[in-house]
Image 1 (cartoon, rainbow, N blue to C red):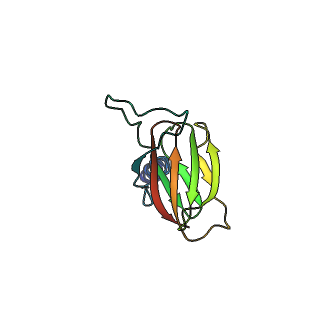
Image 2: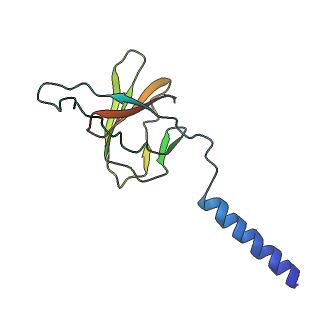
Length: 125
């Protein structure tokens, strides 16, 4: 009886740890791009700039999940014809973004925090 209880307890602890730290199989590998200064926008500084911390996120189907804390972003999906097909503000308090189920195919996903850089990757929905 005591052995069964200990086995059950170890199983519950293992399950709890697994649920809190699930393996990330669909982690996004971000690349960094530079925004082009527009008239009235931020000029490109002459000193080295610090790129903000790269967001940790996964994409499963049409669900984008931020694993770590992040800045406020403008999320943009661009199709193969370089046209914006979806754009939404993602506040730092939001950790899950559900992309429209009507979008299928290959897109470039961009996260712009409003500085001189943005993060992007290619995705397939």
